[in-house]
Amino acid sequence: MSLLGELTPQTTAAYLRTLPAIRERCSRVYDLATQGKLQFFDYHPEKEAEVAAFCLNIIERDYSSNPKNIQPHGRWRHLDAGLPRIEPLLAKWTSEQVDDKEKARRLIDLFLVSVLLDAGAGNLWKYTEPNTNKVFGRSEGLGVASVHMFRDGFFSGLKEQPYRVDAAGLTKVTAERTGAAMQVSETNPMTGLEGRASLLFNLSKALTSSPQFFGTEGRPGNLIDFLESQALPTSPPTVPLSALWTVLLDGLNPIWPSRLSLGGVSLGDVWPCPSLGQTAPGDPESDTILVPFHKLTQWLTYSLVEVLQKELGWQVEGLEDMTGLPEYRNGGLLVDLDVLTLKPNVLPTDPKSGLPTAPPSHPAIVEWRAMTVIELDRIANLIRSELGLTPAQLSLAQVLEAATWKGGREIAKIKRPETGGPPIEIESDGTVF
Image 1: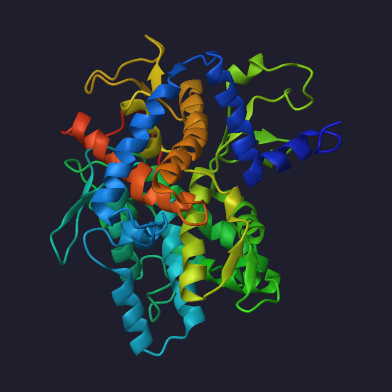
Image 2: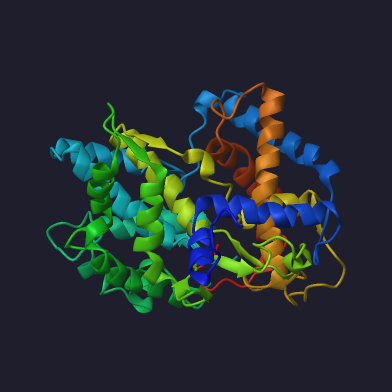
């Protein structure tokens, strides 16, 4: 009998939407890799030390190996690309005597839409910041653009209150308006613009469909009221991570494009991995080959936890269930430093870049992402071992920020200086990665 009880499509779907399922299912893919049974990649564990050394050099360069200086991985970092933008906003709101909870609501509003806009924009798109003329691409560019859209009231349904996101404001979002705000043009093309705008429009429906989480006005920041109702009676309040996860996964479930469903439940960022068809049939859970990632939801969770901790002073319990983010920077680091190597001729080559290419649903991308989740744990442990630190002293969120995500970006720039793009091109629709 499975630990899940009697397996039905509904119970399996519920399990695949939990955080522990991510690491458990990805571990199955990793086990196949150790046996040389992946369909698309060969695994070279002896190269992990090289990745850890590359990351340690970055930590030493940028933080003098002092983990106290490392901020957690979250959208806050990207919104501050090149110069602080969030602190000046907080200072402005403080001068206007905005209370702490409202400041937290505004940050949650901003971070949530910014994360949803954060799917890959492609190699060509750039954002030129109006007041500084600084130029940003990819995730930082999307982040800086989202700050300016937020300041301008792009997401607000109340003209007199620009600093908010609500259902009324989001109903006005179109691909045309989004493209104009993000400076998209024929000479500055963005991958997945339609999908990106569609996510925001669908967000308006999701917010109004879950008033228990987002209030009657359909505002993301109202989730702090729900979380406060779920908090343990400690001082300061202790919020179970599972409560925030429920808000984000259940409350935002309607926004994702229809992909896989199981038992009538839309699974979100969950994909079949045919390699898992090789697992032993005696395992009662081996009937499915689905692997969950929930990357954008985890990215959002990391980002919002920082607001709860810094702005409200709350404790969050259960962060150990979070995984590393299976996206092209972390995954690219592993491919560029040969921990993972594509088997010959398993993917088509993009005629322009000469790089292998595939859509997010391709089994090769699913294998890559699953291996990335487990490898990030392993690389983090190697880094901690070298620095003599425990997970409590150097969290996975700090490793992502200071080492693997940054390392993936830096090695990409070294190997592909013209674009700085990943070693495998992903045909993004604006809703994944």
